[in-house]
Length: 349
Image 1 (tube, rainbow, N blue to C red):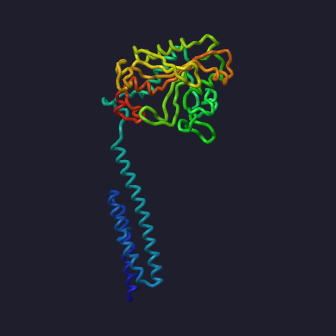
Image 2: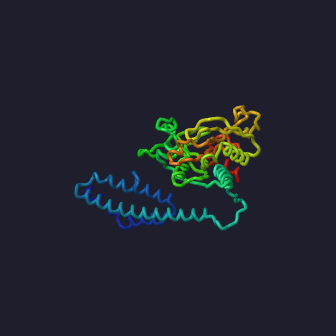
């Protein structure tokens, strides 16, 4: 018997039914994925049995080489199919064991369960809405994606106004944008109804800003009251805002400072005595004793003209909900409200 014939004969002995059955049995008897991986390396690895047999093909003639390659590939495919099926079975069994071990009976009573709580921003929003609802202000909501007219033009913000700068506003390609304030809700309300109007517009707004006191998304509550000309004055606005701020912060002093907003004239910034130092001066209030909390004013006639209102008067105001939440709960960094820190949120249970 020549050397090539001897190699083929030895191969038949190795890969005959008995040897093939031995590897089938080893695969089927594997009790874990780890054991199965060891078998894979022994059979299919670079130094495994199949690799060693394929290496012997270089000593065979063309006809014998083809015959051996066909036989080896047949056995390789059969063993691989068996290996894959067994691996899936073992992985499934392991998963079921793990799921059973980690199963939780949700119907069982646990003394360690803790009650949830509203997020401080939402809790503050609810308090604000509660106050104005009790004062007969309707709560209006609007769309987050706005057009130029409702977000800027109708609010007396012309094309050249710096608030329209790309650094402040998230624009879309079709000249739409994420609203930068909830004032568009006021515009849409006025265009859809006639005075008298008494409303607030709470909701999320978006600007391109991020630091200790600013985030790209935050929440505002803006208010609007419109009635017949001569029936609404700054004194009305001053009264309701002073009452509102004392409702939110307790006994604080309130002052109005002249300011400018494109959609109100006259306009004012509203301050309260510092809730941290009680007006004596500290780092939070920059040693002034005062904290700015909202803006307000008498609605500019140009705004009424944009919505085709005539012979009316009104006032408007707006505030940042996060600003109120930070002051009420004495939170130093605005970003901590949105980081999902359990240690922080647990304090509000």
